[in-house]
Image (tube, rainbow, N blue to C red; front, side, top):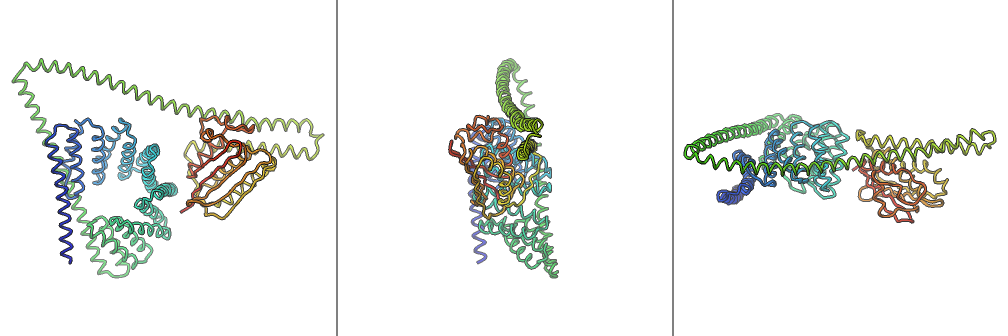
Length: 628
């Protein structure tokens, strides 16, 4: 039975090899029959990809031929594809300097052709090159650039991949909170797109954080979920890796029998697939577990297997290095021979016919004309790009002007009003204090207190806005009861509701704890409720409801105030929009509150949905994340 299985596997392998060889032969025939360098480069790239998938075949020489073609081809898409492939080959073999060389070369051409998707992929690859070179800060810089490109494209899975890479880098920089924050963002996107393989990777990465922190209970919970997904998907390479990791985890807490069980399961899969890195790690962990239960004979025999796997990996690396050196030597030798032959041919041409010098001179004049034409074209392109850069700078300047105007509007309106109130009240107290009743004095003191609180809140808002714009403040993420947040806000706004005879209805129920920055959430909800009070007429109604939907908590704030026109809703959170044109209420501020709300909401992964009907009221729905 075993012989039959081996024969079937061998036949299957030979048939695959035969199919790939047939495909390569067809492509090589096309290469030999064509003079179009762009097509030749594309076909040679396909040959390299096929050979690269056959891991036993060295592709150093064909890859060098591809790199020589980069100097003569004109098709930009083919050029960038060759750079992408070269980067991935060098990256997988640990040659990160070479990987960076071709990734940067590809990025330059992608930027030149304004291909944002390829820019995003290459920026992400450059981040991986720097990460694997242990230059974590540089890796983080390029991951964040790639994230911006993917967000611009609205490519959710590309963005999630960047979030995962950013989280891994923060983990290595020992910024645990930032790492967990980005893992959560990536996991949410992968769950929405049902990408189970990626979800498994995220769970393994998060488990690693809890393992380093000594939280083995949380680590087990995550890694077992990852194992369940990998068993469902049947990815043997990742399944072996996960099983061996679980075995190591059991060894760490002293459960050696369990460790042996999982290590053996993982090793049986790794042995079947000749996955030597997994075998080396697994044999070492299994030997330690056998030693832990006192079975030193098995520990010794397993240690021998570990040494053999280690030697195999070393020999493979050495053979690859020797092969690369030999190919490099042969390529340089051929290049020297080509140069020598070219020189000899030029000398022979000069000796055969001196009259060609005149033709050559004429040809040079034509070439110079072409060069001048190309220079003029490039100058025009440069001017065009310069104009685009100026346009971009103008947009940035407009945003800065809008921010400046917003600030002056706040100073001239929102700060002036409470200060004017202070002046009027203190003047009345100064002039008529002796004639006032105790009730009038209390009333004025209360008005002074309200004005001071209003001014304090406004200044606090300006400081928060400045802190957010600096982007240096770390989030203080923790579990929070939404009901407590709402109760605090109800107490804060009660006097304002009473002064306008507004009925405030609150429906609070028990929900899973939200996972946010508590101070930011308090500011967000309070701003929205304060706006509802401001734009609701006397005798109006405001309702605050809490409920759970789609694994998130919802805070629903509704009023029957003046409402907002549909075309004005998009202006609410924009710094460059004139919010004084929105609605017809006399109670208008400078619009800082909702800009601050949007900044904070984006930081806390809170989604805001606004619905309104002009003249009938407005509804703000806050979708708040919970801890998984």
